[in-house]
Image (cartoon, rainbow, N blue to C red):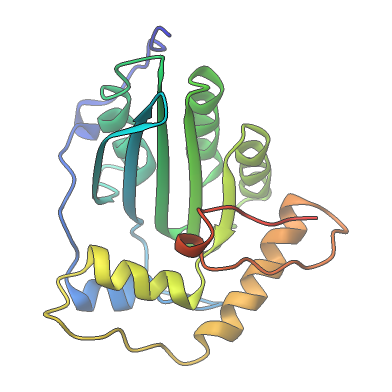
Length: 215
């Protein structure tokens, strides 16, 4: 499938980081209901490529939004779209983000998913970004384009600590109220994605193949 003729800012072009330092992860990913001083978005990603049922390759890394407003999601798209080499391959992408995508980024991501039907995306966010009413619409657009959207569970934070953080061999220390906040945020997200839907909890992503369970 031909790649869409994207117009990217030069500043979007960057290489992903390998990992985050512990203090950055603990501050930026903490799932507070009201977060201040966290104006950056960090995006930890995993990509798996499969073809005809056979595993081909995988990679992982971290992107952060740039100071000139190049959002982390767009940095990932620019890096990733050059790697969609075969229409016969399937690309399974998983994001763990400090904030859910804004409306503009959600629209860009949804467009990529609609164009590349061989790309699947699961997004797990630490916090909900709801500055404008349109941000909720963007999350629904992502779901409509086939993305699976959920909040990060305590087990997801521990997984990211083990995979994406220079942890020095130390175990992850759960933050205060991390599970309570997860339940609250997941209920808010369920309301955004499916109005009047009963609350359905999401099992840890890495144990359930990144499937979001919604009624």
